[in-house]
Amino acid sequence: SAFKQQRLRAWQPILTPPAVIGSLGAVAVVFIAVGAAIMSASSGVVSIDVRYDELCKSYLEPPDRTLTNGTCIVPFELEDDDKWEDSEINAYYGLNSFHQNHRRYVASRSAHQLVGTSMSLDSDTRMASDPSSHGVTDCKYEMSNLDPSDDKEVYTYPCGLIAWSVFNDTLLIREKVSGQYVMWNDGNPNCGSHAGGVPCTTNPTGIAWESDLDKKFKSPSVGWIAANCKYLGGKNMATSGFIDPTIYDSSKMILRQATGNCGQHSCGMRVHKLDGTPNEGIYNCWHNTTDEDLVVWMRVAALPTFKKLYRRIPKGLLKKGTQYELLVQNRFPTASFGGTKSFHLSSGTFVGGRNDFLGYAYILVGALCAVFALVFLGKHLMSPRIMGDPRYLHWK
Image (cartoon, rainbow, N blue to C red; front, side):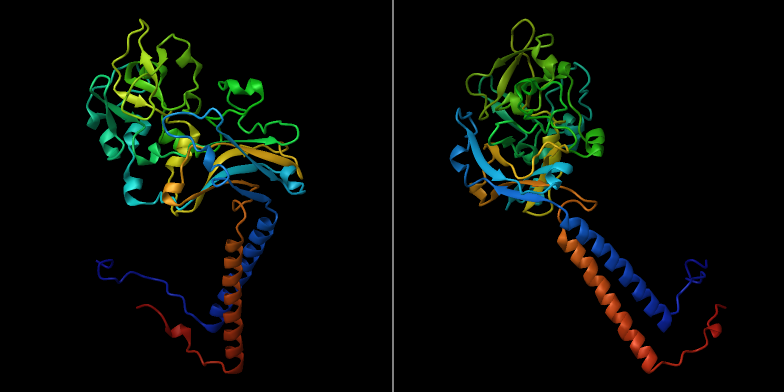
């Protein structure tokens, strides 16, 4: 056929001097214009970085208990710029030397478990004790542990290194003088802390990708939790993402603090049936899979130094030139791998936050194209090359 014999008609542009010089000039104009727009937008970004791991290292909570005086206070001050009040501000946490891109780390997750494939998360069905049927074995690491209280295997939900190492510092902002908190997670009606003027410390809204929440993560129903979760909430129910009031109203289950050795540092609440006897669950449901803090963390970073979105601060909540305090519940250890932790506030643009490099790159490429266009134009004017007649170039 003509296709296999490569005899199909094809268009090949003739690179004449006017065409090459014109193309380079057009690319130069477009790239310089885009670079200037990016630089202009980037110069209007307001941001502040606060490193807190060194200041708060004495407040690091051990994995098996909660400190009673574990709040570290880090002061900072916003510059006198109207953009702090007139823009939506994004709050990020930053980590350094944390290699989320390691091949074993990236592979240690179960997509089937997170989305609930073959787990009937909307029903009260009790799952079989076969890890291969509900995706636990996909995690390879941090899949299960032996419960010494009854010598039975308890499967981790969610499992894997990525989920198990989720960033769990609690960060809040308040004005230094008035003590008023910045209410940056005020859209969750199930969080009781709003009544005391304190932002909800879990289940934020608007920080994860909608596609992830719709297609990759699904939360179990209360009936499923009552039937299948042996333990619930992990170290701290307040930060586990389980804030559905139905969990606590004793209509589906009874929760009692787990006592004794359960095979983990802390297993949280032991789930009981309505008659007061322990259920026969096979999961340690330590974190809600649709908590957007976890969803953001599960989208792994490509580089060992990264920032992840923590909260969105609506326009008008921050005050320019004001002193604030960052309140940190320090739980995420970094000293063991030589890393650092920081907190970032930044406004945004059409290309994200401050990004001078991208603007410089566009301008540099545009400038190079302009230089080559001028060089070729000078060469063509001073010593033009006699071109052949393109009418003789035709396909037979």
